[in-house]
Length: 207
Image (cartoon, rainbow, N blue to C red; front, top):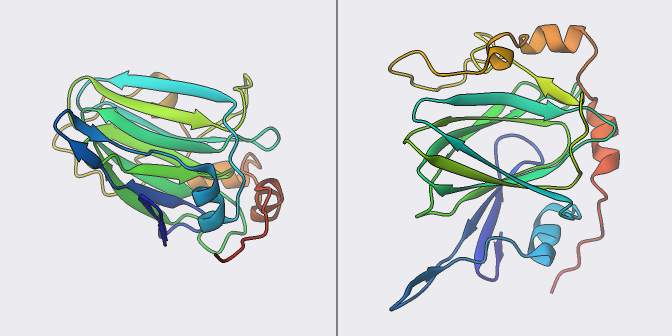
């Protein structure tokens, strides 16, 4: 749906959205309205409040993720590429979700300024397509040690289309992450029902 100066559309993963801002151009360059609280609420039914801001800087071919957060506390995110370029995967980690184990692919770079909104229970992974790729995260909760969910981004059962020309650069933790099936069997994944209860859905009023 269109919302003023941005287009917000649901991905193939339920409750995950692309946010595509329309640039305002003049002789100086471009301005993007990267987030409007009311526009996001109207499109998703979720209230988004920023409690922490992170950014990562990655070399080309660095693969980060798949990362999610346990409930509680949860941590919803809006992720934008502000320098370089990234191929981003959104993966549904919510046991019992209609799209559990499904994914969608979003290419992110500063020219498009496309952002990805992931509420609680969804996993994020991306590979940097250029050196010095910088990803910015707006988060709904402050980080709590020990609450990160790690799932193998190269899990053959997921079959994420990374199209890698060489082995990616990963942290030891990411390389040792469990498959989605192993994480589900181990009881570390949130359920769809408990995630939906955290989204703080508000009534959507038509204009």
